[in-house]
Length: 470
Image (cartoon, rainbow, N blue to C red; front, side, top):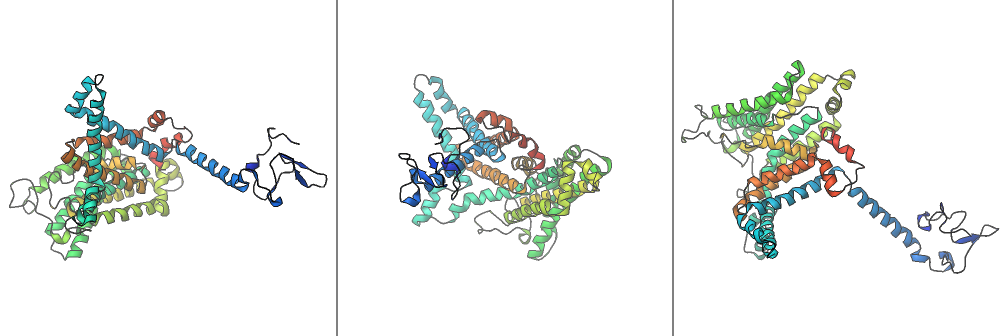
């Protein structure tokens, strides 16, 4: 008889179905090779009509299921990209809660006598934080009160979809600028000029929107393409300089940002562009025939731009993973010297990737004036979508669909932040702080790993994922 605790002896739970070892742990093999159970061992074969211990085959299945669950939890709590991203958001939310408490003088006053009556400080802090984040959710996803009113027949469906409509409205331009930055990253370039490229795109899209008398559908197509063309031209300049002279794209794109912003401020006040009925710096409004149609009716702002953003995300993913140029782009981004040795034109790749990135940023700018965000040029019409695109690209790990999800998160924070400011009296700048905290933790995976005690098995991959993706 073999001892069940003997090292190297296979456990009955790990024996595949239909197979028996030559030496059974709890049985005795006879001379003829037949097996008989040991009395009192409880290992009665199922074929003899006895009941296998712990359910027999059920033990194997349950043991395998437990092992699978343990392996899943073990791999989940590791320093992989998804876990670090989720935990970074959790950390930013917790720190944001502390900032909400600190920024409220009434709540802060209750902490002055915390040792005497701690319940006051804890209740006041919980109230202000929960109210702030509840309004953030209601403004970005859905308001349960609106859903209840719609279900009871006392309200319409528009208030139910209004929060997600606002989120998608803010998301659309961020997808384009995030893709522009991430695409350049994959090619080994740091495109800081998404803001300037989007600015030129918004200028040309608006000019085409109110200067060209065209039929409705054609007018919209021409205006959108004009925005893409403006961004492509502005992206070509640093790409050409990088290819021909080796000028660093960070310097050239930053300088071109200032040029584009100054050009926007100048062109608004020119004759034929400036609104003659206004005295402030604002252009003529874009014709209705050139505006992106709204998807959920005139009462909700979400427009066709979000559909174009999803299409652009798919197109960039296909370009990177399925096309010859995408392969060349990734090769240049990984090692330009090796790519040059393999016969790839590095300079041509730099120029083309900046042109495509500029066109994407220009489409983001066109969304700002052809969509429902604005209908005319102003000095602040472009907002900060170019600089926010850098954060979106970092949060999305420079992967197309990751960028789209990151833009959705930022759009939700922006839409929910507006309601949080109105209903909870929380400064809108706090939303910007939340965005910055998320990016800080995403960019510092070692910090997140240390705080939560994540396994370091895959941490090394995070250091290179920023340049090469997941």
